[in-house]
Every structure is written in structure tokens, then in C-alpha cells.
Length: 262
Image (cartoon, rainbow, N blue to C red):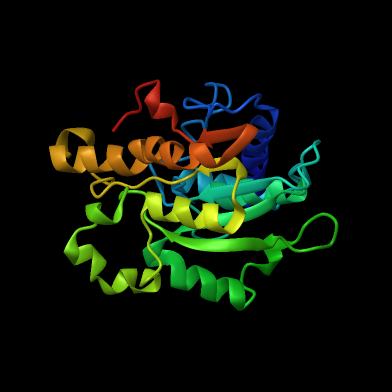
């Protein structure tokens, strides 16, 4: 994980911790100065993966090897006993992972919602130690996950899942477990009762590589469903599970407030 990604995620996690009473914060978006710059990410984030431009990727590699300022090791707050659920982690490189690590450094208990088609690879990589380098905490320990849930935030309830998706081999990892937003929220309730922090760090779009004027209505609405409405759905279902004083946050992109060429 590069230093810039962790630093930005550390800033996001700091904002979560500074949030006042949770009723839940339906519009806990970041200010423009805190949002990712045009050179930081491309026009999409895919299920926790931040798609960097080649230019930025090359620059980041150079900075990482040229004595860049080390990322902060932890938040200046004690979150011991607090429970966080983070949706949208699929590897150890995205913002979701970095936010999880920042919260873990502060003592929070972390659970993840992992996109179902990526779940088997994620769990296998975790079990084999492929993420260990990025699991190390400043106190010498390792970031642990209390639970890892299969999740696809495009679907609110089991009735919303098309038959071809339910029977798809890519969704076999969730067989018998349920992966819709309502089902995951119910599992979290059964396992923890209440949570304190909710992080929406996911997005997707079937036509994400197309220029805007070549995007179909179906593709446009699918992107809004996966990337934006999924946060509304999560707050609807997870909001009642949150302790007073908790916080919910979603990541966004600079194109939501200014024009980006292409």
C-alpha cells in the first residue's frame, strides 16, 4: 500500500472519529479539499479497488522510493471497544483497507463486507499471509478481522437477486449465507448487536470504461445503483444497529462537483 493512499485514508478515518452524534449522518461526504484530486484516481473505484491513472501510479512509485514522508501510524483517538463495519474491501491496496487499518491502529474492532466474486481470493490470500506486510500495526501486532461477510450492495433483499446471479458460480462463496444488504445487516446484528462506525467504500459500473456520451441509460443507472444508492441502502439497514454517537461515511469522487474531461 503506498504512502499517499494510507495518508488519505487516515484523513478519512480521522473525519469518522471527529463525527458527532450519529442520527445516522446520511450525507457524511467529504469537503472538496479532502476529496481525491483528479490526478489521484481515475473516474471510478471498483469494489474497494482505486483505479489510478498510469501517470499517478508512476509518480507514486517514484515518491515511495525517494524518501517520501511516512504515513501516520495511527489516529489520535482511542477507539478501543468500538466496532466498525467496512464495505468494499477486496484486497490490501484500496482505500477501504487503509481506513480499516487506521481504525484498527486506534483500537477499533473491524468487520468487512467483501464483494462476493472476490471473497474466495481475498480469504485465501489472507489465510496464506499475502496481506501480512500490510496487516502489521505500529504496536507490532497484526490487524485482525472479527468477521468477513460476503456482500453485494447492488441487492437490498434476497428477492432482488436475479436467478442467473443466485446460480452464478462467482457467487458460490456465499451459498447459504446471504449477501444482500439486508441479510448482511442481519448477520452483523446477530454477531455484534450494535456497531459504531459504518464505512461505504465501494462502487462499480458495467460501462465504466466508456466516455459519458457512449454510456447507455442502463449502464448509467447501474453505476448509480452500485456506487451511490448502495450507501442509502446501507444506512437504512445498518442505521438502526448503530450506537448513539456513531458515524457513517461514504467515499466519493471529484467529478461529483466539477467537470472531468472524458
